[in-house]
Figure 1 (tube, one colour):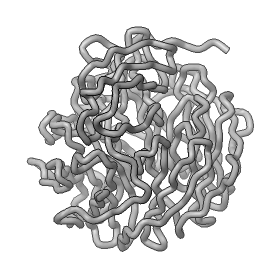
Figure 2 (cartoon, one colour):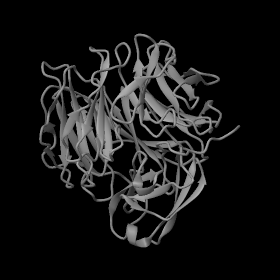
Figure 3 (tube, rainbow, N blue to C red):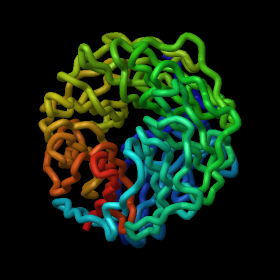
Figure 4 (cartoon, rainbow, N blue to C red):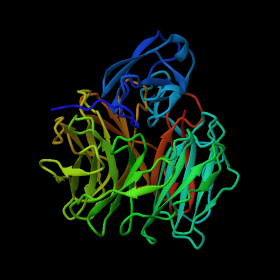
Length: 457
């Protein structure tokens, strides 16, 4: 199989980093970064600073992390830049610098939960004002005056409302994603609206404020729902894949590089009622692929990218999963260099771990599916206990809890239920909100319309 080497595309960094965490005060080491679309001149960035980087392949880079970089506890943001000067930069993956913990001790941040207006729905975390501290964008859906709330992190687990927040919207937002859609180095937002059959882009000004893009609204198929961001045609401009549950298809929005989008031809079919979407290179050809949860019957559709914004169903797709597939994430859970999937089953109360074979097909991991709480929905990735293995955290809608699955590095997990109680938990994101080197959680409470910020202690 021919593997494409990137020339001028936006790369994607996959989890885990190797190692995925480090202890403060340790010696320097070589960091291995796996992903898709790395150029021969690509540079690994550590909190925005360039590391001495070695190109291994379009899927792998190594970089020298100095002892000074990890001298004190904190969490580094790891990105890859394909262009000189830090351009064509990837998604960020967090690298905790903290001592190993046998168990997670969690407590709410001061001022948590944070009350917001409207009926809260989706949420995304990114650095919207360029201060190196993770912020939050929270969609207020199904409200008389729909909007997006921008909460700027203070670095201690508390937040302030950004100027101009909430951002008023014409149509109620369903899903929200972040990326640099106009190539100016500032984080932007894209939302979908089921009621308006459209998407909308809000261009970041770099200070936590946003300006609606000129091309709004963007046609996005019937009842556009969940979204995933990536460079699907390798042109150096971020694109977006949107699920359309009522037409059993996906809409692929190809970025024009200025915050506007053009629909790709031949939208891929996605079995019955496609929902959540994740990205990865599941067959190792250097093109971004998609994995989509579907229902009736429950499973995962794997769509292999052709490198031009079109997709082809993978052999063996759809893959049966439980009774009602909900959340999905992609990562390498058994450290074999191949992208795997974790899929939650909202009725069976489990998470299925599907290990990639490297050709677009998957097999169940030993011990899969893994029991979790009742009604699992959202999953997030990270090394939560700093033991050097990738973990999963799962929100359980029906018993208002969060289950932490500690990874063993071979595709198996050990489960523990955290004491976090949220009245009606929904979307969850993870970041180090207080800068102590441990990944924390922010969880939407769709019942009381609040955001809970839960810090590791």
